[in-house]
Image 1: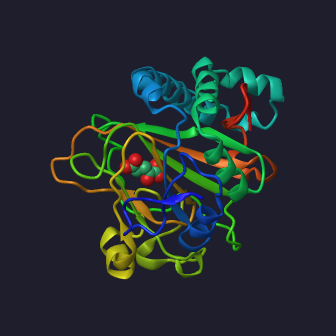
Image 2: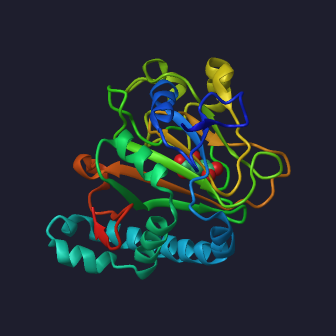
Length: 282
Ligand SMILES: O=C(O)CCC(=O)C(=O)O
């Protein structure tokens, strides 16, 4: 049985390192649309040792992804006409396939099981949407409340965000704050509260004051460390924890989706299978 986390004030927190039964996690996700999973790596000591390498891999992959994106803007009009192999060449990136190996080698079977069940299919990761955040990256370090994607009307999400800190967060380094409340009473499609135009309006967002006033009682700012992740569906309002004098923080946010339900907007992005070894275009 997945054991309830030591933080009993987070009704959505679970240690899955030795999980036999993930139903309890799935039930919590169905009601909160967010789960804090602890023990997501098979061998924490190994991950601790590899941290620096992983960070470099991510940084290189993200840098290449940014270059590809500006190239992509330029090529946008002709992109539709490119064949799949040409697109693959345009996007080929050794770091991304190495990261792909790394995730499949290091994540626990329980993590794969939870994500597979939530997405109702084989899990793919959109690496083009992944970010590795550091304080020195001033433009994107602390984000206000926003949603990553509009959720569908069922309880099952098309896109899951998987947020993994590579250091302790929540006290001196900013954690991720989430509004954990049932889907049907979170902002609806096209709702225009406080000028919020939708998920694309990421930086403007609905306004932190408005979110806190409206949903403040559901705000959680979990303390997390290496080996934990926050998994949530696209409709969940979240922001970087606004800590005073926040220290450097390294974290990764990945977008997971089901092979059988690829979101249109991921078309052409570089995606990898969570439990296979080669990268492909979406
Ligand atoms: O890492 C953070 O502080 C914010 C990440 C985030 O909210 C996002 O990328 O959607």
